[in-house]
Amino acid sequence: MKGDRWELKGWLEDRQDQIAHHWRSEIRAREDRRGDGGDGFLGGFLDDLLHFLSACLGSQKDVGELIWQQATYLYGSLALQRGLAAGEVVEELQLLRTVILRLLLETPPAKLEDQRFQRDFLILNKALDQGVVRATIAYVDDLFFAHLQGSGVPESLTADVEEEMGRQLETFRKELNLLEPSPPYHEKPHGEG
Image 1 (cartoon, rainbow, N blue to C red):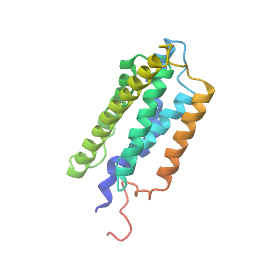
Image 2 (image 1 turned 60 degrees about the vertical axis):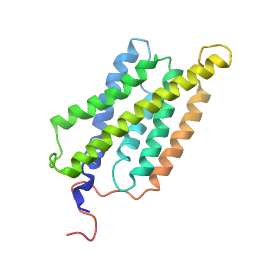
Image 3 (image 1 turned 135 degrees about the vertical axis):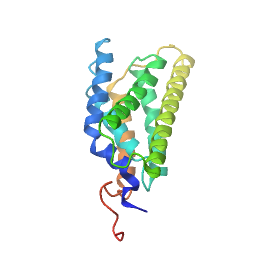
Protein backbone atom coordinates (compact mmCIF):
# COMPACT_ATOMS: atom_id res chain seq x y z
CA MET A 1 0.00 0.00 0.00
CA LYS A 2 1.42 3.34 -0.98
CA GLY A 3 1.83 6.28 1.37
CA ASP A 4 -0.68 8.37 -0.55
CA ARG A 5 -3.46 5.86 0.22
CA TRP A 6 -4.79 8.11 2.95
CA GLU A 7 -4.31 11.36 1.10
CA LEU A 8 -7.95 12.41 1.54
CA LYS A 9 -7.87 11.41 5.21
CA GLY A 10 -4.74 13.50 5.71
CA TRP A 11 -6.25 16.38 3.76
CA LEU A 12 -9.34 16.29 6.03
CA GLU A 13 -7.25 16.09 9.19
CA ASP A 14 -4.97 18.94 8.07
CA ARG A 15 -8.00 21.15 7.43
CA GLN A 16 -10.17 20.00 10.30
CA ASP A 17 -10.00 23.36 12.10
CA GLN A 18 -10.78 25.26 8.92
CA ILE A 19 -13.69 22.95 8.04
CA ALA A 20 -15.03 23.14 11.60
CA HIS A 21 -14.82 26.94 11.59
CA HIS A 22 -16.77 27.26 8.34
CA TRP A 23 -19.33 24.61 9.36
CA ARG A 24 -19.91 26.22 12.76
CA SER A 25 -20.24 29.63 11.11
CA GLU A 26 -22.93 28.33 8.75
CA ILE A 27 -24.82 26.69 11.62
CA ARG A 28 -24.33 29.71 13.87
CA ALA A 29 -25.92 31.94 11.22
CA ARG A 30 -28.98 29.68 11.23
CA GLU A 31 -29.04 29.38 15.02
CA ASP A 32 -28.84 33.16 15.49
CA ARG A 33 -32.23 33.42 13.89
CA ARG A 34 -33.58 31.41 16.82
CA GLY A 35 -31.45 33.20 19.40
CA ASP A 36 -29.07 30.27 19.87
CA GLY A 37 -25.34 30.82 19.48
CA GLY A 38 -24.18 27.48 18.03
CA ASP A 39 -21.12 27.32 20.29
CA GLY A 40 -20.55 25.51 23.56
CA PHE A 41 -21.75 21.92 23.56
CA LEU A 42 -22.88 22.07 19.93
CA GLY A 43 -19.51 23.41 18.79
CA GLY A 44 -17.67 20.58 20.55
CA PHE A 45 -20.08 18.05 19.07
CA LEU A 46 -19.39 19.38 15.56
CA ASP A 47 -15.63 19.09 16.16
CA ASP A 48 -16.10 15.48 17.26
CA LEU A 49 -18.18 14.69 14.19
CA LEU A 50 -15.38 15.93 11.93
CA HIS A 51 -12.86 13.77 13.78
CA PHE A 52 -15.16 10.76 13.44
CA LEU A 53 -15.72 11.46 9.74
CA SER A 54 -12.01 11.36 8.94
CA ALA A 55 -11.83 8.02 10.78
CA CYS A 56 -14.07 6.59 8.04
CA LEU A 57 -11.00 6.65 5.77
CA GLY A 58 -7.79 4.71 6.18
CA SER A 59 -6.84 1.30 7.46
CA GLN A 60 -9.41 1.14 10.27
CA LYS A 61 -12.36 2.54 8.33
CA ASP A 62 -14.79 -0.16 9.49
CA VAL A 63 -14.52 0.96 13.11
CA GLY A 64 -14.53 4.60 12.03
CA GLU A 65 -17.71 4.12 10.00
CA LEU A 66 -19.45 2.44 12.94
CA ILE A 67 -18.52 5.30 15.27
CA TRP A 68 -19.56 7.88 12.64
CA GLN A 69 -22.97 6.23 12.32
CA GLN A 70 -23.46 6.10 16.09
CA ALA A 71 -22.35 9.73 16.46
CA THR A 72 -24.63 10.99 13.69
CA TYR A 73 -27.53 9.08 15.26
CA LEU A 74 -26.75 10.94 18.48
CA TYR A 75 -26.60 14.18 16.47
CA GLY A 76 -30.13 13.54 15.22
CA SER A 77 -31.29 13.21 18.83
CA LEU A 78 -29.50 16.43 19.67
CA ALA A 79 -31.24 18.18 16.76
CA LEU A 80 -34.63 17.32 18.22
CA GLN A 81 -33.52 18.49 21.67
CA ARG A 82 -32.36 21.77 20.10
CA GLY A 83 -35.82 22.28 18.62
CA LEU A 84 -34.86 21.86 14.98
CA ALA A 85 -37.34 20.79 12.35
CA ALA A 86 -36.74 17.41 10.74
CA GLY A 87 -35.22 18.88 7.58
CA GLU A 88 -32.86 21.15 9.48
CA VAL A 89 -30.71 18.29 10.78
CA VAL A 90 -30.38 17.10 7.18
CA GLU A 91 -29.44 20.63 6.09
CA GLU A 92 -26.78 20.91 8.81
CA LEU A 93 -25.07 17.72 7.70
CA GLN A 94 -25.36 18.79 4.06
CA LEU A 95 -23.64 22.05 5.04
CA LEU A 96 -20.67 19.92 6.12
CA ARG A 97 -20.56 18.30 2.69
CA THR A 98 -20.71 21.73 1.03
CA VAL A 99 -17.88 23.10 3.18
CA ILE A 100 -15.69 20.07 2.40
CA LEU A 101 -16.41 20.23 -1.34
CA ARG A 102 -15.75 23.96 -1.47
CA LEU A 103 -12.38 23.52 0.25
CA LEU A 104 -11.51 20.53 -1.95
CA LEU A 105 -12.05 22.69 -5.01
CA GLU A 106 -10.03 25.58 -3.54
CA THR A 107 -7.12 23.48 -2.26
CA PRO A 108 -7.26 20.04 -3.87
CA PRO A 109 -4.88 17.29 -2.76
CA ALA A 110 -1.96 16.66 -5.10
CA LYS A 111 -3.36 13.46 -6.61
CA LEU A 112 -6.99 14.36 -7.30
CA GLU A 113 -7.06 12.11 -10.40
CA ASP A 114 -5.61 9.11 -8.56
CA GLN A 115 -7.99 6.11 -8.46
CA ARG A 116 -7.38 5.55 -4.75
CA PHE A 117 -8.22 9.17 -3.98
CA GLN A 118 -11.40 8.89 -6.03
CA ARG A 119 -12.34 5.70 -4.17
CA ASP A 120 -11.78 7.45 -0.84
CA PHE A 121 -13.85 10.39 -2.08
CA LEU A 122 -16.73 8.00 -2.77
CA ILE A 123 -16.28 6.46 0.68
CA LEU A 124 -16.43 9.95 2.20
CA ASN A 125 -19.63 10.75 0.30
CA LYS A 126 -21.17 7.44 1.35
CA ALA A 127 -20.30 8.18 4.99
CA LEU A 128 -21.91 11.63 4.73
CA ASP A 129 -25.03 10.07 3.19
CA GLN A 130 -25.18 7.46 5.94
CA GLY A 131 -24.77 10.20 8.53
CA VAL A 132 -27.77 12.05 7.13
CA VAL A 133 -29.82 8.85 7.22
CA ARG A 134 -28.79 7.96 10.78
CA ALA A 135 -29.44 11.49 12.07
CA THR A 136 -32.87 11.52 10.42
CA ILE A 137 -33.77 8.12 11.88
CA ALA A 138 -32.77 9.28 15.36
CA TYR A 139 -34.76 12.47 15.00
CA VAL A 140 -37.91 10.62 13.91
CA ASP A 141 -37.46 7.88 16.53
CA ASP A 142 -37.09 10.41 19.34
CA LEU A 143 -40.01 12.48 18.08
CA PHE A 144 -42.19 9.35 17.95
CA PHE A 145 -41.27 8.37 21.50
CA ALA A 146 -41.87 11.92 22.73
CA HIS A 147 -45.39 11.69 21.32
CA LEU A 148 -45.86 8.15 22.63
CA GLN A 149 -44.78 9.09 26.15
CA GLY A 150 -47.38 11.76 26.52
CA SER A 151 -46.53 15.38 26.04
CA GLY A 152 -45.81 15.21 22.31
CA VAL A 153 -43.10 17.79 22.89
CA PRO A 154 -39.52 16.54 23.11
CA GLU A 155 -37.50 17.58 26.12
CA SER A 156 -35.24 20.56 25.67
CA LEU A 157 -31.48 20.29 25.83
CA THR A 158 -30.81 20.05 29.57
CA ALA A 159 -27.53 19.78 31.43
CA ASP A 160 -28.29 16.10 32.08
CA VAL A 161 -28.85 15.43 28.38
CA GLU A 162 -25.63 17.26 27.50
CA GLU A 163 -23.75 15.27 30.12
CA GLU A 164 -25.08 11.95 28.83
CA MET A 165 -24.31 12.83 25.21
CA GLY A 166 -20.87 14.05 26.31
CA ARG A 167 -20.20 10.65 27.91
CA GLN A 168 -21.19 8.89 24.71
CA LEU A 169 -18.96 11.14 22.62
CA GLU A 170 -16.08 10.50 25.03
CA THR A 171 -16.60 6.76 24.56
CA PHE A 172 -16.42 7.22 20.78
CA ARG A 173 -13.22 9.28 21.11
CA LYS A 174 -11.64 6.60 23.32
CA GLU A 175 -12.53 3.90 20.80
CA LEU A 176 -10.84 5.88 18.04
CA ASN A 177 -7.75 6.58 20.11
CA LEU A 178 -7.23 2.83 20.35
CA LEU A 179 -6.91 2.64 16.58
CA GLU A 180 -3.51 2.71 14.97
CA PRO A 181 -3.16 6.14 13.39
CA SER A 182 -2.66 6.22 9.66
CA PRO A 183 0.46 7.95 8.38
CA PRO A 184 0.13 11.53 7.16
CA TYR A 185 -0.79 11.55 3.47
CA HIS A 186 2.53 13.02 2.43
CA GLU A 187 4.60 10.30 4.13
CA LYS A 188 5.02 6.66 3.28
CA PRO A 189 4.44 3.98 5.93
CA HIS A 190 7.55 2.42 7.44
CA GLY A 191 9.12 -0.23 5.27
CA GLU A 192 8.03 1.25 1.94
CA GLY A 193 10.50 3.06 -0.19
